[in-house]
Image (cartoon, rainbow, N blue to C red; front, side):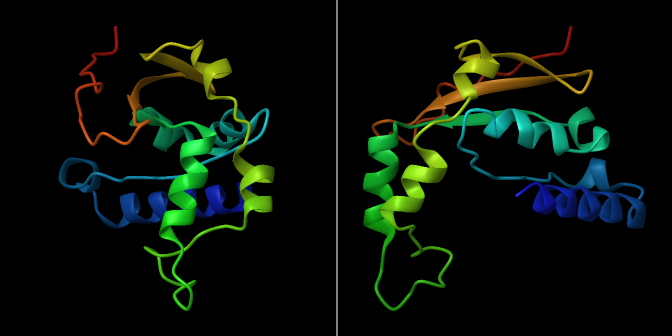
Length: 144
């Protein structure tokens, strides 16, 4: 998985190099889920300094049971290659997503700052269990 994060770093660097106004004219959204005892911590450690310098993290909190329910709901036989109708087998869900380290690295807080590779990155938690679609948990923050 870390190889793919390196590819994200490279793509971001290439886009920034091609367009001197890239950061003024664009927002880059990087989405990923990382399970495991050090999944997010390890993933964040592979993000480039340039990405981290401009990053804001929005963590969408959802229970493992709700993740499994949504995974089953997405499944469409015959459309496994679709970006909208893909799902993982239960064994892979269990292996990759049952545990994650978000609460450990965020200190259980709903907003604040993470120290990643010497950079302070703001974060906010969006509670989506049960799925609610509301944006009320997202906070605007300034780096002190």
